[in-house]
Length: 442
Image (tube, rainbow, N blue to C red; front, side):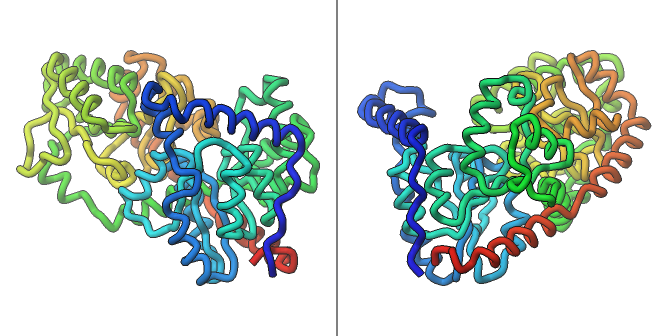
């Protein structure tokens, strides 16, 4: 069967694509003078380097599905669905961000992937879809781009998974208008819970037949899968050999503002209690660049705190106050070392993954900018997570060990009850794919 032709794009999408094309054409020759991040985006190949290999792999399968992921977090949410696909159905991940590609490569995953082309341009997406002829495109959470959605409409359509609306959308008529335009290009929406289903139905006016009855978030499945995988790499003996016997707090996906809060609090504990009783810090940066690692080391030195890098821990029982992790892709495994976790990002922008420490049975805390995370809001509402506004809040939180131990156990119990979404969504997706099989490209 020959591929279905891409649906004829509406005028607004053609205008959108043309504007992107103009910007790309104008900026490409100017790239040496642009910021590095924009340079890297502009210089991406229009046809991904991995496309020829993917075409060969595609020929070995009856059908394929695209999984459009922003970066590493969304990729993790796609993995439970990818793992449940039948052998005849090839799942291909499209990363919008290069950081997603780096994460994939650091983990040495075998899931096939490609990097999105520069700009949301119809003429960039069309040859990719034509070459791989997917039977559908699954967008994980929020990567909604008009040209991509339009081209996907001719190849089985686009489905949105783990869908929720941000607070900004709920309170802005402009963003609501834009979301409504985008959702005209979406065939089916899987919301994270019934509250979000109601928001999509009535706040945005999405037709009921577009919203699936299956609800939930594959994040919960994936975080427990990763915890089980990490359990095979037992770090108990490594911890006994290399780290002091102290109460341990891990800073997960930390930024400078998170580190500042923790170091100020740690300094107070060291000065007041003495180093043997002070909390030991494990700092896992969101992006452990050499500059950020050096900044932490210099900052800690001014406070008489001793740091050691993970890559340099060759001798047992190092004499340190802070373990500075200088490798990526280890956070899920390292959570097993800690007693509690400060999840990064929420002191300056938005909170990162709160589920990984929670499913490990760690008490979690984070800064005040956490409303981007549906699961963080759930934990706060349930009284299981602590919001810290400053170092005083953090210090008060970290010193109450008995309460943190109880909260950690309660958090794990709560999150365990939210598993099972991946099985339900995969079953529903495959049912719809089978139903639409006569109309699919092959």
